[in-house]
Image 1 (cartoon, rainbow, N blue to C red):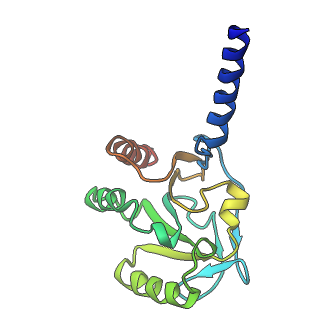
Image 2: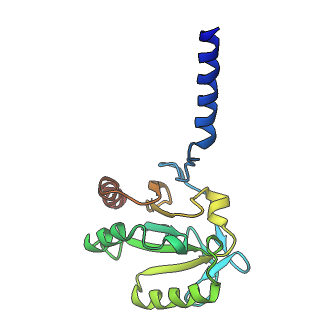
Length: 183
């Protein structure tokens, strides 16, 4: 009798641990994959500078660094951004794009767009894009309320992908992935 009661308690505790465990979702693109081409235009999204459409394969032929950012988490990967800036990467081989998940925040779009226009002027080597409908979340499975970093090689294959804040080890891996893409 005691043994069956213990088993019942263990089963109950196990069920509760699953119920209250944090939900972990893998929102990283698989390394080695080549995600389908995405076009953000019209109601789905646009470029900050000029407002035209953005196509995800725009930078084929270059190593591409993509940040997919919830505006509420915009500072999460500042250390990774600084490491990339300090790496003095060859501008003729590397492109960077920041796609902003406009639907992930309660902040009004006009306010975010104004800040992005200022950033576009300050960081002219980074292309800023607005994703109004979570297209990269839905089509590529990127993190919805986070700050993702994805590195693509010159053919558009994923070399590195992390959802969330990069630690020191991941920043080193990211830099190595960028440099490996030059080959």
